[in-house]
Length: 293
Image (tube, rainbow, N blue to C red; front, side, top):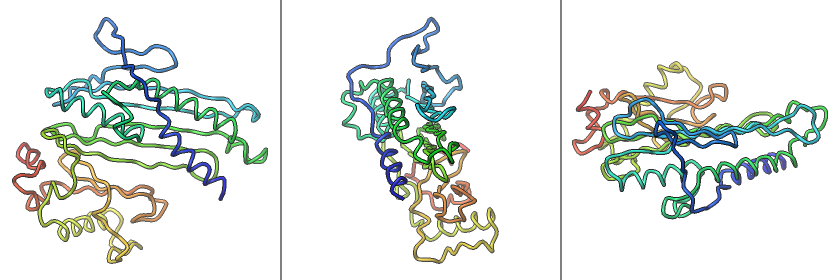
């Protein structure tokens, strides 16, 4: 139990280990694409045409050997996205700062003037993981050498980028010995008209009962009406889950064990916007999607 607590607090520490510098990502190749060379880091422009925002992606990886356990390694991988172009420069600057803060789990003030060096953040995470791994990667002893192979993967993914609505996900997969990995996810949805982080109250009117009913319908279709889970329990708040927008749907995400058995892992329940259009107010940002379907 004590070891699991140590792993948990180190995981938080690793997410908070970004350095604060005044340098920006610099350098262009002859195609106009930003490039970082060295330290196994690369930047390349995402080729797909986004409707409103263009993004750069930074991919970095490293593998560390354990000093005492033969053949054991720790793998570090990240995929970071940074907004590159948008018609509103002020919104773009705010979005760049928010992406950094959300990805590294830091408050905005850690990145003054939007000039934090992402590469320094990455290198600091690598260093912290390597140091922690050397100290703790073999705590289970010779009988459990397979548990000395660690993994830390942090990725960002765009889920919605149209109609001035942006949804994205930050996924962490972390295994640091023990019986099972950690894989939390965080979701963010912004209205780019006013750079507002959206909540359900911004999207729907008089929605609580009807939206919960729709979620139960989707759940029963997905898992069967006789699922062990009791939705009438006062302990369950279906509408307090994280949500995102994608493919003309609103999707709610629930951590492992929250609304299903552990074998089902993280559960995602998606509702088509056309099925709940009666809940969408004329002033809702979702109306822009509905109007263009």
